[in-house]
Length: 152
Image (cartoon, rainbow, N blue to C red; front, side, top):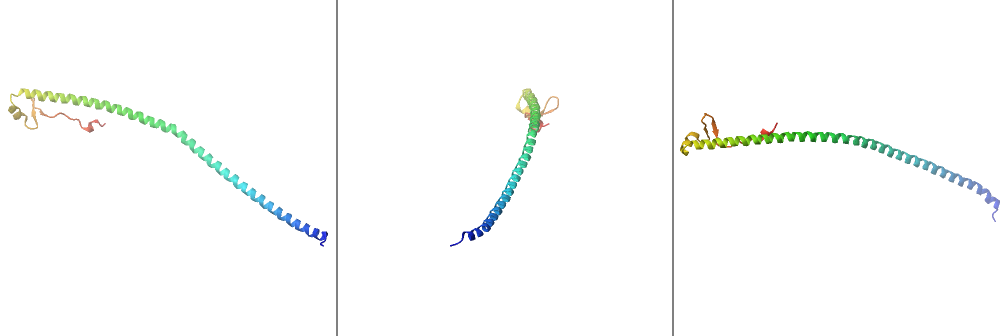
């Protein structure tokens, strides 16, 4: 039979070894947990720093929005004013063109009535136009406005 004393002698040293192994594992686990917690805090700090930078950037962009809106609104108003002026000029030029076409029609119809026959008219007018009683040449075509007349 084995003596209880002999087994008790071997037990304290293996208990001591076991305790050292457990303590060593606890220390390693504590160090590992501390390192993991440190990395986690660093990740959270980096995320916080990134979000802070993003907030500053978005605030800056938000401050630019009213400036851009005001600038765009001013451009729109300027274009509206310019379009209004151009429309008025176009209406005035159309009115002038209509007046000139009426004058040309009146002159052409008046000169046709002055001639007795078509032969007299053809002798005086020729193919492209005629010379009125004051000696100015006229064309038998209405006056047309060119597209570039409307540009400033």
